[in-house]
Figure 1: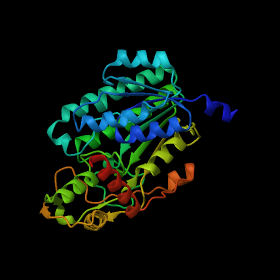
Figure 2: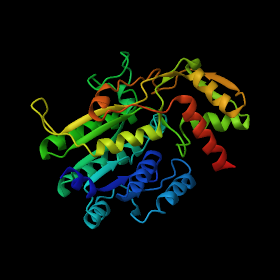
Figure 3: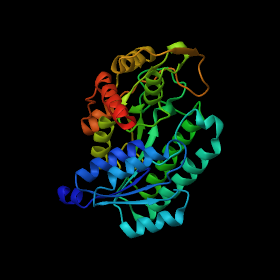
Length: 332
């Protein structure tokens, strides 16, 4: 019976032209699942990169794509009605801590209004499992490491983080009230081929490659728990096939998981790895800490290990090497 259920799974992936959305959709399609992708293809970063990701997905016969905003509830409902997905992987959002300082309204529209539409349609369509992207940013100024899902995260230090924490709370309410199985994933600095151009692997590689000074904040005294995209995708798919259930200890079929590498790396060491892979030294310019940034991230992944036997496979040297090979090939 369990195998039959898996074979009948249909996925709707929001943010399908995004970094995590594309890689997850591609893996599902290779596993012969039907995938409906939606994305608004906005100009937050290179539209060319998003379109090239879509080209990969459109090679699969079981992939359908629609260019819409998740704020448009009627269009969303039409897609759900036409394709009748059983599972929703929600990655569409306005990303970026620093951009949320400049344009908080964009986060309200996409991350709050848009997500509210997703929840309401999942309720009406009786979706079997909603998996949504949260962020390690919700841990804000917490100084007890590694970060654990049981810690209180009620004091975000960026508006982006506040919207992600809000998503978790909204999802829990819907899960409790309407018995929708929901899993929230707190991603820790995801990187790899086709990564976002506003993220540090891309920014540092481009700058060092072109002899442009790189901005090193907090004088390099920062640590990040980098997680390679293939490890992330493996976890997402395993999680999607295992929806949470109500237990005697919970109010809802609801789970939150950290997805990280569990091995934080110092910013300077990380830059050195990029330099070594490029065979070129970078020009570093040091700056104070930026508003909204976190000095240290470190994921406790014990709950994820227990739930799906998750174990990251890709170390930083291998992951950066793979990214730079892609970067050089993509940009010739």
